[in-house]
Length: 407
Length: 114
Image (cartoon, rainbow over the protein chains, first blue to last red):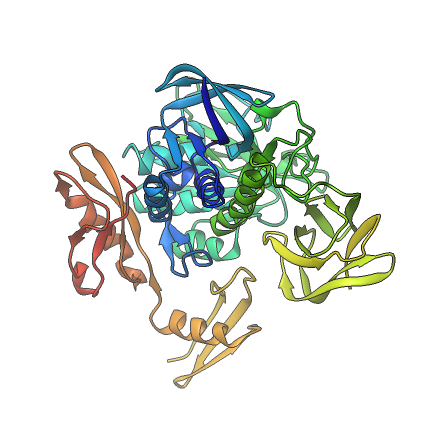
């Protein structure tokens, strides 16, 4: 049995950042990573655009990971277990298998930092056959950027999430022909700058309200029947066309990887655990941060969130986390997708809440109120659903319920 | 020469829809909500540049690499081809693998985390 103050599961940006923060706040940390190297998905995200907030310079994914990895490796209070898989979390005991053999790690605080998994063909009930050549954007990304192999020559991308857009460019640069990106929604969930840099730069068509009706092929993908959908997302059969291709890349959303902690309640909006002000789940010793909690817009925000959570987890492990006073519910109007955390506690000081808007707003004010009294507000020049926004709320005197609204 | 182009500003996540017109040498930008949109649109119309990120072959597989500064957009494919020609024994983080690639002033450096 290994004993530690804080156990971090996952060695991506969230895991490395939360481990560093827990250590800096005085805890002994064990960090468990199933891959052979720290960095997580950042290692295959070789494009740039990372680090502008955290490091104040523009980095690629592997560079961002490298800087964190070096800091973790220098930290004597962090023990990293690579090639090690967590098989079970039960109370404050975690079972692992891997480089240490089969072991049990006992920790005062356990932090979930396992990130997300991509939705697959099965998750979206993709119609047609299942030949070779259907893969998620992340799998295609790993093949090209880590393994140095091309998944195919003629590609159709379903879904216009950011990884799908990035892969449209990457596959094109490596010599494949990306025939189209099909998006079932009337708008893309990807950043518009990516639509411009990754699709428009290479004249790759982005077809809104279009989807794959059927994948065709026995051993290898031979093509797709695709076409338009109506307002109820039903295929319009008269628009059906055949597009020959050998590869179908899926970029259809991410799901927090909560299977190891399926015993705690999750939010129906974020699919991540429901957490309080200190990022504790329903089990007070179990914390959550990064993309396993909610899908972030930027890795910088993942690292910053994990930094906060590392402090809370470390304080908890040392028995110093403030005793919880009466809870205050953090609610929101219909203008928001979600607000997190959903519970804060009565007392003094400021608490940061994160939120996503449901629709684009221009020149509006986000207001936090308690019993009609304005606690804090923030002017937003332009807010889009793809962007994660924050508001610092002074909770002095607040009781019962805080509600966020757009005015 | 008169040019007109519609583009999305990539300076921040807001993604303003810009219209850029060049009439008798003068550039006129509309649709922007801040001044950064003007700077972006001007460069995008006259000499668009892009960072290139790709991977280089080594004896053990491939390693991620990038240009140190953005290169002219019409050179992006050629830069990727230049990197593809290389077969390195090994590649270390930060190592320069091509100096001043295609005379663009940009070096290609290894970014892989290992």
